[in-house]
Amino acid sequence: MPEELGLQLSRGEVDVLVGRLQPSSPRATLRHVRLYEEPVRLVVRHEHPCLSTPTSGIEDLMDLPWILPGRNTQLRQELDELFGRRGLPLPANVIECSTILTLKTVLLETDAVAPLPLLIGARDPLLAVLPLGLDTVPREIGITTIADRRPSASTRLLIKELVAVARETDPVLLESRR
Image (cartoon, rainbow, N blue to C red):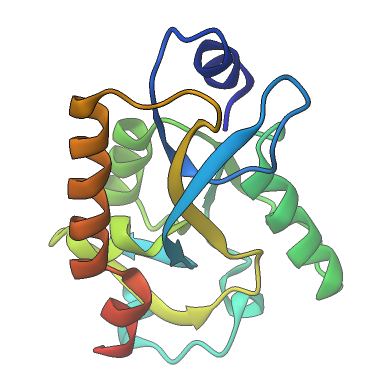
């Protein structure tokens, strides 16, 4: 959870956070409701040349442009570690971007590859998910509230609906259907 959102939650300026679950902070005791675990996959444009060429691993994609999140993000740290574990340098052509609209535009107009949460690639008809697994830390997605603060009736209803929708769209189930 980005630091500013965590502060707003602890000060009571926001009631609930929905996103990647993080460990509890010393400022407040947090309550987490896990919605699903979302793997990170490599995403390309729907007509990307890699989709018609067998690819055995990220080693085969090193000459392509890569869109990576900024260095200060947890996903970027995980990706840097992934390359290190495989004995690979970062790709030579890296575009750092954390804005999904910009990232998608670059993906659609180039042969770039982007590591993204599975649901982003799987749900967009203009994008495709490469059939390669990435051994990054699983992204546990959920709801965070302050443990000793009772949510309002509308917040409880929102949480109930989020849980129901998450059960229908669990990305692990989605990936197993491919």
